[in-house]
Length: 85
Image (cartoon, rainbow, N blue to C red):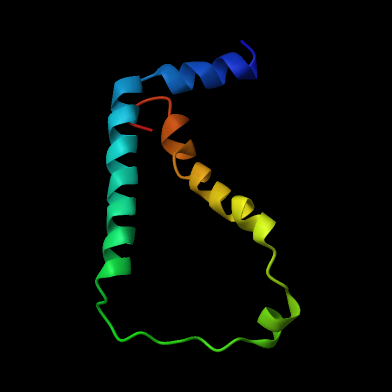
């Protein structure tokens, strides 16, 4: 069996469980993230810019690279082969 087939079999195993848990985990993370943006728990502290911050310019086109990190979140559960790990 080649690697592609092995990955497909891993993704298909316990598919409904992975879908439900993925939705719950993602919703929980986003819910917490949005809650903390709107409800301040501690005093807000502005971080001063460091020398490294001033050396690296802001490039608006790289926001997609930053947002692509959200794609890494479901990779581990999707590649689990069984419930026991």
